[in-house]
Length: 264
Image 1 (cartoon, rainbow, N blue to C red):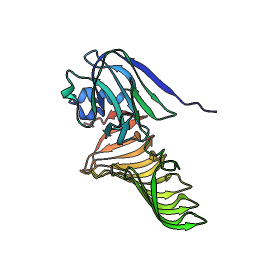
Image 2: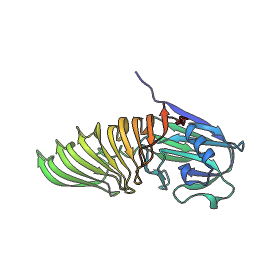
Image 3: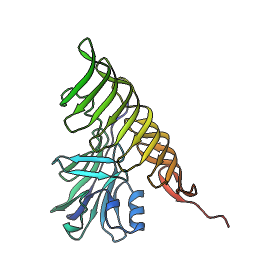
Image 4: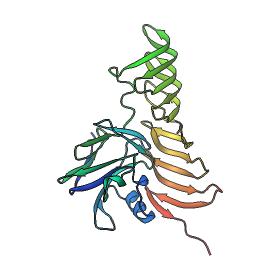
C-alpha cells in the first residue's frame, strides 16, 4: 500500500515572486541552484526560497483565485524580491505579512505558498462528469462512440476515437494553453506513449505517464537544442542535452545537471 507524500516547510515574511523562476532576473548561477533544489532552501544572499516540481511539467496552471502561472522549466517557486514591480507578469508578486507554509501535496498535485494554492495537474477534469463540456460525434447506446469531439468550457478539446463514452483510440487532446497531446488513448486515460507539442514549437516524443513525459523520450526545442534520454514525472532524469549542431552540452543523472568535460 502506498501513501501520498506532502512536502511542507516555512518561508519568512516579505515580498516574493511566485512562479517559474526562469522568468525572474536571476544570474545563471542562482537559477542553476534553484533548479537543483526541491523544497525550501537558502540562496547565495542568505534568503529563504522555495521551489517545487509541477505534476505535469510545463504548462499554464491556475491558483485558487484564478490567477494563471506559465511554466517552462517544470517548476514553480517562491523567490524574495525588493518590490512587487520586479514580479514577472507570467507569475505573481505577493507580500507575506507573517511566516507561511510552502509545500507540495502529491495526492492533490497542489503547490502551496501560504493561502496561494496552485493546482498542477491539468488532466484531472478530463473525465469528470461534472465538468461542463459539449460533444459532437457518433453515439452507441446513448454514449459517445466512434469518432467525435469534446469541447470543454475552458476551451480545451479532444478530437478522436471514443468507446463507451470514454476516449479510446487515436486522438488529440489540446489544452486551453495550446499544448497538444497526440497518441493512443485507452479507457479515458492519456496515452502511455505519444507526442506533446507546444505553441512555441517545443516537441516531445516518447513514453508518457498521466500526460507527462516519463520513461524514454526526446525533448526538442524550436532552435534545435534537444534532450535525449530518460524522463521522470516530466523532468529530465538520465540522459544528454545537445545543442542544435548535435554537440553534447551536459549530461543528467537522476535529475542533476552534470556539465560535459572537454577532452584535451
